[in-house]
Image (cartoon, rainbow, N blue to C red):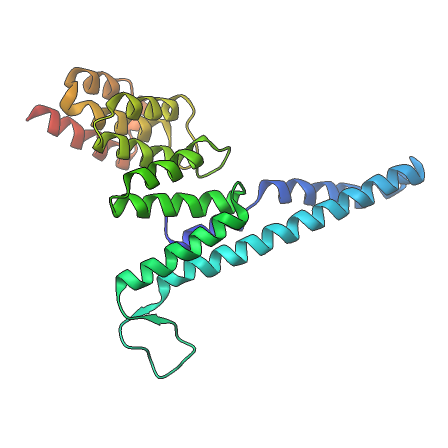
Length: 236
């Protein structure tokens, strides 16, 4: 997920959509609402105040997360003459600054949707730097959270476990994605990942998983190509 894809995802909020629908309904049924008296009006006003507060808080988190993620767009090398252009002497220096920004954000907003996204990114970066303990800690928090990004954290955590030879733990995570697919990780994608996990240690299990993929899913080019790649590996 790129920074721009992340920004697009954050712009869609089901809670805000639901509240907007309620406001539209209230506007078109004003006379009926008045019949319920002052008490009901006060409840609605309070609810509106809570919605405004929550929306403003979400917008603040989004802006701060976007600022942290924008570090990845900074230049690497000698600074430009334009002092408004952010730059870092090396790629490592830029990544260090990014990780510090993510950590500060997580400390401030941990547990929110935006905090989970930041923690997912920190976990994957820690994994690339061979900080296995730190990566597992971050990814497990997000994987266990009620977050839209939890499926991605489960896949990353499964890969981490696989590298540590914790095949049972990895398979448990992938099977949970198969049972509870999402917009980010479909059932077919989870099944292919599970087959890849088993292709060396349990080839027959891998074949069985591939056979269980829904025929309609197999008609999709991406799924068909991925399944064929695993099948080819199994045939070697």
